[in-house]
Length: 392
Image (tube, rainbow, N blue to C red):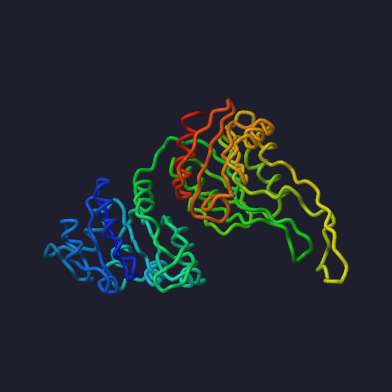
């Protein structure tokens, strides 16, 4: 297999050398293309010595005289990877600008595109960058989201280049799409719900929807027809997934019951509010000196309703618990009539709500359980489907 690795001008460019090496170990012939800014951090000599292949830097570079390198490399590649991808590079790719060798090569390519952003957190969150990422993903690009943490400028937030194993896994997954779920219908609930207090305020939780998005992406790569019923989450979904948006638990319940008809697999990954405000107020509640009492009524049990309404489907729930004791998850599994339940201990750092990583304990109806390692949510999702497909 052939990979073109584009390196743009982030301080994380030095890590592209490790990425090139790991892609080679995974069986790829790697050719590297550097932007002008990338050359401020890494060199042509480094990548040519590492890969044994020519390295492109200029739009008019021709390693083979008379051959247009941006066309030849684009056609020969099985995948194009840009890591690190800066805000400048992402925005130019989204706009269809081809003003250097890397962007020109990407425009000439019809192969899968994998993008691993790395930049200052504020640059990553800027509306232009987020709009470009959404547009590129809509066109089919695979985004390996940056990690949260301290970045080179001294600030902290989401902007660190993803781990090399995570990027390599995304590349391998992109070029080796499976058909194990081809012809199968998968329905996933994802994200939080919002339960209104008045027309301004609501009750919700810290779910980002990243796990649901990762499960959808993994199922899509396995060939499934994927529908997600999603609350107001921040995580994006890949092109090819049908997304039905809702706000409240009741809306999710009603829409999921309709969407799940005829489903082969149903996954309840949403962090659904257990209660809604019974005495919801129209307009806006005004502050007074008096105490305010909210009356809460139970919401429908969505995953239990889906299991009851679809006896032929393999139905899996999620249980976010502040403990590693699996007895609560096992009780939920039996009470709701599920095939399996994925439990995660949200009292532990890096697990559960609004994180990039997770660790799952998958419990089956016969009492057996299997545990994942702590890994990215994308890796967790692939592990999840591997385990479910072994058992179903």
